[in-house]
Length: 145
Image 1 (cartoon, helix red, strand yellow):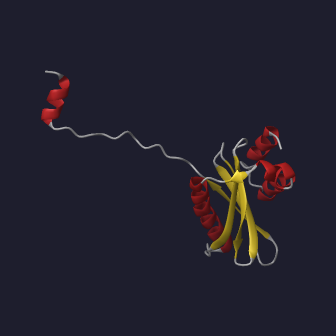
Image 2: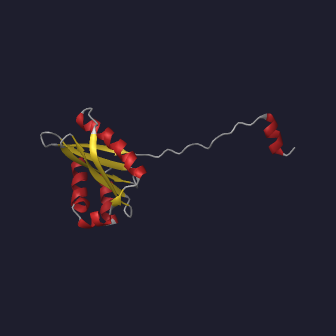
Image 3: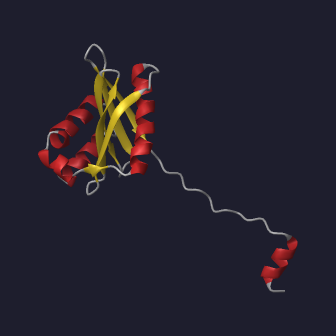
């Protein structure tokens, strides 16, 4: 589990081959025992935003049903990787999210066993500075005149 493997995963996540993304994650991260040893439960903020992102992605995969349960969100902060699993109806799905590029992938097998994928992006928006309105009297007082 190295930064090199994470960079390879980030590069894959810019493409369209979702199965390769999931395969790379499972091969190099998901099946690595040290991943679980070094991971910690995600912060409440990360858990809340990911749960909302997952619900939207699951709705896309399933055609509208976004009711997910038993969400487990773990983070490997030294690599900036958040991952976990959830249950939709009786099906177990998974996800991973690379903080550096703000991109994640949700995978959920459908009833026939064929995987459904949805990529999601998260961008933080910077708020413009607050513009405070001043009365002419306040402006005069601040000008030092």
